[in-house]
Image 1 (cartoon, rainbow, N blue to C red):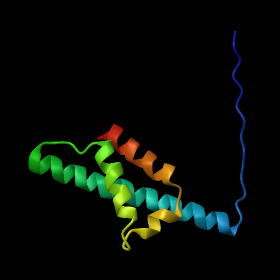
Image 2 (cartoon, rainbow, N blue to C red):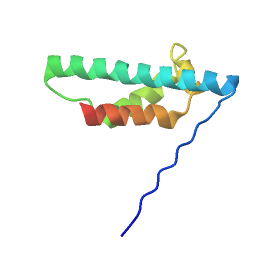
Image 3 (tube, rainbow, N blue to C red):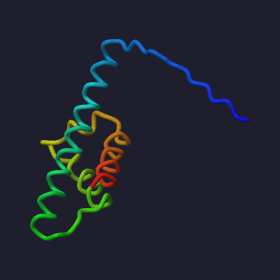
Length: 90
């Protein structure tokens, strides 16, 4: 018989970490909502789906623009994971 254990941890981020968390959550939310809107519009127009691969390539190109340069400040894995979650949900 296997016994499972659970641990609870509490973190106390410093001010710099709080700012990084806020930026990361904001960028993840922006990426998710941006491509959700794009997927909805494309489906309504063409009845086709935008895949994760297409979204990831567009996001990489988007990061290079001046308007969306702030996406480079956060962890790219968090942004890619939000696209994966969107692809699963859609």
